[in-house]
Amino acid sequence: MPMRLLTAITPHGYGHAAQALVVLEALCARRPDLELHIATTVPEAFLRSRLDHPFHYHMRATDFGLKMSSALEIDLPASAEAYAAQARMWDSLLEAETAFLDALRPDLLLADVPYLPLAAAQRTGVPAVALCSLNWADIHSHYFHDRPEAGQVRERLLAAYNSARVFLAPEPHMPMPDLVNLRTIGPLARTGANRRATIDARLGLAPDDRLVLIALGGVQGRLPMERWPRTPGLHWLVREDWRVERPDCHAIESLQMPFTDILTSCDALLGKIGYGSVTECAVNTTPMLYIPRADWPEEPYLAGWLERHGIIARVEQQQVETGDLAARVEQMLRCPRPSAPLADGAEEAAGFLLR
Image 1: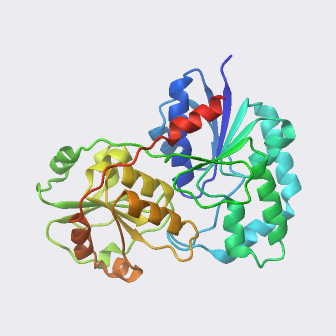
Image 2 (image 1 turned 30 degrees about the vertical axis):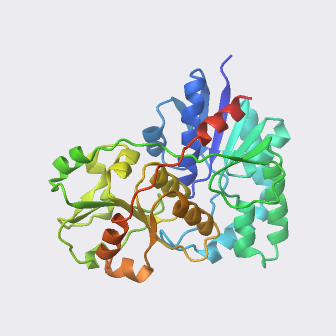
Image 3 (image 1 turned 90 degrees about the vertical axis):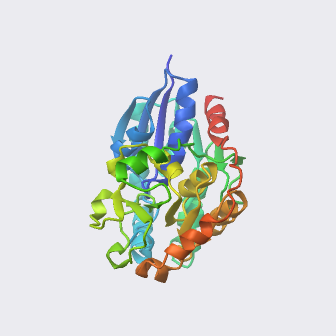
Protein backbone atom coordinates (compact mmCIF):
# COMPACT_ATOMS: atom_id res chain seq x y z
CA MET A 1 0.00 0.00 0.00
CA PRO A 2 1.39 3.44 -0.89
CA MET A 3 1.85 5.83 2.01
CA ARG A 4 -0.33 8.96 1.92
CA LEU A 5 1.56 11.95 3.29
CA LEU A 6 0.04 15.37 3.91
CA THR A 7 2.55 18.21 4.15
CA ALA A 8 1.23 21.49 5.57
CA ILE A 9 3.42 24.54 4.96
CA THR A 10 3.38 28.05 6.43
CA PRO A 11 3.06 30.54 3.54
CA HIS A 12 5.29 33.19 5.15
CA GLY A 13 7.58 33.76 2.17
CA TYR A 14 9.12 30.72 0.49
CA GLY A 15 11.48 29.65 3.26
CA HIS A 16 9.23 27.08 4.93
CA ALA A 17 8.35 25.53 1.59
CA ALA A 18 12.02 25.36 0.62
CA GLN A 19 12.84 23.50 3.86
CA ALA A 20 10.01 21.02 3.43
CA LEU A 21 10.68 20.39 -0.25
CA VAL A 22 14.29 19.37 0.39
CA VAL A 23 13.01 16.74 2.82
CA LEU A 24 10.21 15.62 0.49
CA GLU A 25 12.71 15.18 -2.33
CA ALA A 26 14.80 12.83 -0.18
CA LEU A 27 11.71 10.99 1.05
CA CYS A 28 10.26 10.50 -2.44
CA ALA A 29 13.57 9.10 -3.66
CA ARG A 30 13.24 6.39 -1.01
CA ARG A 31 9.50 5.89 -1.52
CA PRO A 32 8.62 6.55 -5.17
CA ASP A 33 5.12 5.16 -4.50
CA LEU A 34 4.40 7.97 -2.03
CA GLU A 35 1.01 9.63 -2.47
CA LEU A 36 1.84 13.21 -1.61
CA HIS A 37 -0.53 16.03 -0.70
CA ILE A 38 0.68 19.58 -0.02
CA ALA A 39 -1.54 22.13 1.74
CA THR A 40 -0.36 25.75 1.52
CA THR A 41 -0.94 29.01 -0.31
CA VAL A 42 2.67 29.14 -1.50
CA PRO A 43 2.27 29.22 -5.30
CA GLU A 44 1.92 25.78 -6.84
CA ALA A 45 4.37 26.73 -9.59
CA PHE A 46 7.11 27.32 -7.01
CA LEU A 47 6.51 23.93 -5.42
CA ARG A 48 6.56 22.09 -8.76
CA SER A 49 9.73 23.92 -9.82
CA ARG A 50 11.52 22.36 -6.84
CA LEU A 51 9.92 18.92 -6.63
CA ASP A 52 9.63 16.44 -9.50
CA HIS A 53 7.49 13.94 -7.59
CA PRO A 54 3.77 14.25 -8.41
CA PHE A 55 1.58 15.72 -5.69
CA HIS A 56 -1.94 16.95 -5.02
CA TYR A 57 -2.03 20.69 -4.31
CA HIS A 58 -4.52 21.96 -1.72
CA MET A 59 -4.66 25.74 -1.75
CA ARG A 60 -5.30 26.25 1.95
CA ALA A 61 -3.33 27.57 4.88
CA THR A 62 -4.26 27.71 8.55
CA ASP A 63 -1.48 30.07 9.57
CA PHE A 64 0.32 33.10 8.19
CA GLY A 65 3.50 33.46 10.23
CA LEU A 66 3.63 37.24 10.36
CA LYS A 67 1.98 39.97 8.34
CA MET A 68 4.54 42.00 6.39
CA SER A 69 4.37 45.66 5.41
CA SER A 70 7.39 45.20 3.11
CA ALA A 71 9.93 42.53 2.28
CA LEU A 72 11.89 43.44 5.41
CA GLU A 73 9.39 45.06 7.80
CA ILE A 74 6.83 43.24 9.92
CA ASP A 75 3.41 44.82 10.28
CA LEU A 76 3.26 44.28 14.04
CA PRO A 77 -0.26 45.68 14.67
CA ALA A 78 -1.75 43.61 11.85
CA SER A 79 0.13 40.50 13.01
CA ALA A 80 -0.99 40.93 16.61
CA GLU A 81 -4.60 41.39 15.59
CA ALA A 82 -4.48 38.37 13.25
CA TYR A 83 -3.26 36.14 16.09
CA ALA A 84 -5.89 37.59 18.42
CA ALA A 85 -8.61 36.91 15.86
CA GLN A 86 -7.33 33.37 15.40
CA ALA A 87 -7.43 32.87 19.18
CA ARG A 88 -11.08 33.95 19.24
CA MET A 89 -11.92 31.54 16.39
CA TRP A 90 -9.69 28.68 17.55
CA ASP A 91 -12.43 26.12 18.13
CA SER A 92 -14.07 26.62 14.73
CA LEU A 93 -10.72 26.70 12.94
CA LEU A 94 -9.70 23.46 14.64
CA GLU A 95 -13.02 21.86 13.68
CA ALA A 96 -12.47 22.82 10.02
CA GLU A 97 -8.92 21.46 10.00
CA THR A 98 -10.07 18.26 11.70
CA ALA A 99 -12.71 17.82 8.99
CA PHE A 100 -10.05 18.31 6.30
CA LEU A 101 -7.86 15.60 7.82
CA ASP A 102 -10.82 13.28 8.31
CA ALA A 103 -11.72 13.63 4.62
CA LEU A 104 -8.16 13.15 3.36
CA ARG A 105 -7.22 10.37 5.82
CA PRO A 106 -3.41 10.71 5.56
CA ASP A 107 -1.13 8.08 7.04
CA LEU A 108 1.23 10.81 8.25
CA LEU A 109 1.33 14.59 8.61
CA LEU A 110 4.45 16.70 8.11
CA ALA A 111 4.09 20.33 9.25
CA ASP A 112 6.56 23.15 8.53
CA VAL A 113 5.40 24.59 10.79
CA PRO A 114 1.67 25.40 11.10
CA TYR A 115 0.17 24.43 14.44
CA LEU A 116 -3.52 23.87 13.66
CA PRO A 117 -2.82 20.82 11.45
CA LEU A 118 -0.79 19.34 14.31
CA ALA A 119 -3.62 19.97 16.78
CA ALA A 120 -6.08 18.39 14.34
CA ALA A 121 -3.79 15.41 13.83
CA GLN A 122 -3.73 14.83 17.58
CA ARG A 123 -7.54 14.85 17.58
CA THR A 124 -7.83 12.40 14.71
CA GLY A 125 -4.99 10.10 15.72
CA VAL A 126 -2.86 10.84 12.66
CA PRO A 127 0.88 10.50 13.42
CA ALA A 128 2.56 13.87 12.94
CA VAL A 129 6.07 15.27 12.58
CA ALA A 130 6.97 18.97 12.85
CA LEU A 131 9.92 20.37 10.94
CA CYS A 132 11.39 23.87 11.20
CA SER A 133 14.25 26.05 12.41
CA LEU A 134 11.75 28.07 14.50
CA ASN A 135 8.24 27.83 15.92
CA TRP A 136 5.47 30.41 15.91
CA ALA A 137 4.86 30.14 19.65
CA ASP A 138 8.29 31.60 20.36
CA ILE A 139 7.99 34.18 17.59
CA HIS A 140 4.60 35.33 18.93
CA SER A 141 5.99 35.56 22.47
CA HIS A 142 8.96 37.58 21.26
CA TYR A 143 6.80 40.29 19.71
CA PHE A 144 3.47 40.11 21.54
CA HIS A 145 4.18 38.83 25.07
CA ASP A 146 2.40 41.82 26.61
CA ARG A 147 -0.88 41.25 24.74
CA PRO A 148 -3.83 40.01 26.85
CA GLU A 149 -4.22 36.85 24.75
CA ALA A 150 -0.46 36.06 24.70
CA GLY A 151 -0.61 33.33 27.35
CA GLN A 152 -3.49 31.54 25.68
CA VAL A 153 -1.85 31.73 22.24
CA ARG A 154 1.45 30.39 23.55
CA GLU A 155 -0.20 27.55 25.47
CA ARG A 156 -2.20 26.38 22.45
CA LEU A 157 0.67 26.63 19.99
CA LEU A 158 3.15 24.84 22.25
CA ALA A 159 0.61 22.09 22.96
CA ALA A 160 0.20 21.56 19.21
CA TYR A 161 3.95 21.45 18.60
CA ASN A 162 4.56 19.12 21.54
CA SER A 163 1.84 16.75 20.30
CA ALA A 164 4.02 15.79 17.30
CA ARG A 165 5.96 12.54 17.49
CA VAL A 166 9.10 14.63 16.97
CA PHE A 167 9.95 18.25 16.17
CA LEU A 168 12.86 18.10 13.74
CA ALA A 169 14.98 21.26 13.99
CA PRO A 170 17.53 21.58 11.17
CA GLU A 171 20.77 23.36 11.87
CA PRO A 172 21.01 26.28 12.28
CA HIS A 173 17.94 26.79 14.44
CA MET A 174 16.68 28.92 17.29
CA PRO A 175 16.87 27.46 20.79
CA MET A 176 13.42 26.09 21.59
CA PRO A 177 13.61 24.97 25.23
CA ASP A 178 9.85 24.53 25.69
CA LEU A 179 9.62 21.80 23.07
CA VAL A 180 9.87 18.41 24.77
CA ASN A 181 10.17 16.54 21.46
CA LEU A 182 12.95 18.59 19.85
CA ARG A 183 15.52 16.72 17.76
CA THR A 184 18.34 18.56 15.98
CA ILE A 185 19.22 17.34 12.49
CA GLY A 186 21.77 18.51 9.92
CA PRO A 187 21.26 21.50 7.60
CA LEU A 188 18.65 21.45 4.85
CA ALA A 189 19.92 22.85 1.55
CA ARG A 190 20.12 22.10 -2.15
CA THR A 191 23.41 21.87 -4.00
CA GLY A 192 23.44 23.69 -7.32
CA ALA A 193 25.51 23.39 -10.47
CA ASN A 194 27.84 26.22 -11.48
CA ARG A 195 26.60 27.38 -14.89
CA ARG A 196 28.34 30.73 -14.97
CA ALA A 197 29.73 30.33 -18.50
CA THR A 198 26.21 29.78 -19.85
CA ILE A 199 24.88 32.74 -17.87
CA ASP A 200 27.66 35.05 -19.08
CA ALA A 201 26.96 34.08 -22.69
CA ARG A 202 23.21 34.57 -22.27
CA LEU A 203 23.52 37.98 -20.58
CA GLY A 204 26.51 39.20 -22.59
CA LEU A 205 28.79 39.52 -19.55
CA ALA A 206 32.58 39.70 -19.66
CA PRO A 207 34.55 36.98 -17.83
CA ASP A 208 35.62 39.37 -15.06
CA ASP A 209 32.21 40.99 -14.52
CA ARG A 210 30.59 40.61 -11.10
CA LEU A 211 27.07 39.21 -10.92
CA VAL A 212 25.03 39.58 -7.73
CA LEU A 213 21.69 37.82 -7.21
CA ILE A 214 19.07 39.77 -5.25
CA ALA A 215 16.55 37.52 -3.47
CA LEU A 216 14.22 38.52 -0.65
CA GLY A 217 12.80 35.12 0.18
CA GLY A 218 9.47 35.20 -1.62
CA VAL A 219 8.08 38.12 0.40
CA GLN A 220 6.50 40.88 -1.65
CA GLY A 221 8.46 44.11 -2.01
CA ARG A 222 11.40 45.45 -3.96
CA LEU A 223 14.53 47.54 -3.55
CA PRO A 224 14.81 51.12 -4.90
CA MET A 225 17.26 50.22 -7.65
CA GLU A 226 16.34 53.22 -9.79
CA ARG A 227 18.37 55.32 -7.30
CA TRP A 228 21.44 53.12 -7.41
CA PRO A 229 24.55 54.30 -9.26
CA ARG A 230 25.95 52.17 -12.06
CA THR A 231 29.30 50.53 -11.33
CA PRO A 232 31.30 49.30 -14.34
CA GLY A 233 31.59 45.52 -14.30
CA LEU A 234 28.87 45.01 -11.65
CA HIS A 235 25.55 43.44 -12.68
CA TRP A 236 22.43 42.49 -10.74
CA LEU A 237 19.90 39.68 -11.13
CA VAL A 238 16.40 40.68 -9.98
CA ARG A 239 12.85 39.43 -10.25
CA GLU A 240 11.18 40.19 -13.55
CA ASP A 241 8.13 41.73 -11.87
CA TRP A 242 10.32 44.44 -10.33
CA ARG A 243 10.45 45.93 -13.85
CA VAL A 244 13.89 47.47 -13.41
CA GLU A 245 14.87 49.14 -16.69
CA ARG A 246 18.67 49.33 -16.48
CA PRO A 247 21.38 47.73 -18.63
CA ASP A 248 23.15 46.40 -15.52
CA CYS A 249 20.01 44.59 -14.28
CA HIS A 250 18.76 41.29 -15.65
CA ALA A 251 15.65 39.23 -14.93
CA ILE A 252 16.19 36.01 -13.02
CA GLU A 253 13.39 34.37 -15.01
CA SER A 254 15.16 35.06 -18.32
CA LEU A 255 17.82 32.50 -17.44
CA GLN A 256 15.28 29.65 -17.22
CA MET A 257 17.45 27.79 -14.74
CA PRO A 258 16.82 26.26 -11.31
CA PHE A 259 17.21 28.91 -8.63
CA THR A 260 19.96 27.02 -6.81
CA ASP A 261 22.02 26.77 -10.01
CA ILE A 262 21.72 30.55 -10.38
CA LEU A 263 22.73 31.08 -6.74
CA THR A 264 25.75 28.81 -7.15
CA SER A 265 26.81 30.60 -10.34
CA CYS A 266 26.67 34.15 -8.97
CA ASP A 267 29.50 35.99 -7.23
CA ALA A 268 27.26 36.85 -4.28
CA LEU A 269 23.70 36.99 -2.96
CA LEU A 270 22.11 40.17 -1.62
CA GLY A 271 19.10 39.51 0.58
CA LYS A 272 17.64 39.21 4.03
CA ILE A 273 18.62 36.59 6.57
CA GLY A 274 16.43 33.55 6.07
CA TYR A 275 17.01 29.86 6.58
CA GLY A 276 17.16 28.85 2.92
CA SER A 277 19.37 31.75 1.86
CA VAL A 278 21.85 31.10 4.66
CA THR A 279 22.17 27.33 4.21
CA GLU A 280 22.24 27.37 0.41
CA CYS A 281 24.89 30.10 0.39
CA ALA A 282 27.01 27.98 2.76
CA VAL A 283 26.55 24.69 0.91
CA ASN A 284 27.25 26.30 -2.47
CA THR A 285 30.06 28.58 -1.12
CA THR A 286 28.28 31.72 -2.35
CA PRO A 287 29.08 34.85 -0.29
CA MET A 288 26.07 36.62 1.21
CA LEU A 289 25.45 40.32 1.73
CA TYR A 290 22.58 40.61 4.16
CA ILE A 291 20.18 43.40 4.95
CA PRO A 292 19.36 43.26 8.68
CA ARG A 293 15.76 42.70 9.75
CA ALA A 294 14.92 44.83 12.76
CA ASP A 295 14.48 42.69 15.89
CA TRP A 296 14.07 39.39 14.00
CA PRO A 297 14.83 36.81 16.73
CA GLU A 298 16.15 34.12 14.37
CA GLU A 299 18.75 36.38 12.75
CA PRO A 300 21.62 36.03 15.28
CA TYR A 301 21.52 32.23 15.05
CA LEU A 302 21.43 32.11 11.26
CA ALA A 303 24.03 34.84 10.74
CA GLY A 304 26.32 33.35 13.40
CA TRP A 305 26.17 29.95 11.73
CA LEU A 306 27.02 31.38 8.31
CA GLU A 307 29.94 33.29 9.81
CA ARG A 308 31.35 29.90 10.85
CA HIS A 309 30.53 28.06 7.63
CA GLY A 310 30.64 30.64 4.84
CA ILE A 311 31.19 34.27 3.91
CA ILE A 312 28.73 36.86 5.18
CA ALA A 313 28.76 40.65 5.42
CA ARG A 314 26.15 43.07 6.68
CA VAL A 315 24.95 46.10 4.71
CA GLU A 316 22.96 48.85 6.33
CA GLN A 317 19.54 49.98 5.19
CA GLN A 318 20.96 53.33 4.09
CA GLN A 319 23.40 51.56 1.76
CA VAL A 320 20.51 49.67 0.22
CA GLU A 321 18.54 52.89 -0.23
CA THR A 322 21.42 54.64 -2.02
CA GLY A 323 23.02 51.62 -3.73
CA ASP A 324 26.38 52.18 -2.03
CA LEU A 325 27.27 48.50 -2.30
CA ALA A 326 30.07 48.05 -4.84
CA ALA A 327 32.93 48.42 -2.35
CA ARG A 328 31.25 45.99 0.07
CA VAL A 329 30.85 43.42 -2.71
CA GLU A 330 34.50 43.64 -3.71
CA GLN A 331 35.70 43.50 -0.10
CA MET A 332 33.67 40.37 0.54
CA LEU A 333 34.81 38.65 -2.65
CA ARG A 334 38.44 39.01 -1.62
CA CYS A 335 37.80 36.67 1.34
CA PRO A 336 38.91 33.05 0.84
CA ARG A 337 35.99 30.72 0.36
CA PRO A 338 35.70 28.05 3.07
CA SER A 339 34.86 24.42 2.40
CA ALA A 340 31.13 23.73 2.20
CA PRO A 341 29.35 22.16 5.19
CA LEU A 342 27.59 18.84 4.73
CA ALA A 343 23.84 19.22 4.18
CA ASP A 344 22.65 15.88 5.53
CA GLY A 345 19.45 16.96 7.28
CA ALA A 346 17.12 15.84 4.49
CA GLU A 347 18.24 12.22 4.71
CA GLU A 348 17.93 12.31 8.51
CA ALA A 349 14.43 13.74 8.26
CA ALA A 350 13.38 11.23 5.60
CA GLY A 351 14.52 8.42 7.89
CA PHE A 352 12.39 9.76 10.74
CA LEU A 353 9.33 10.06 8.49
CA LEU A 354 9.67 6.48 7.25
CA ARG A 355 10.09 5.15 10.78
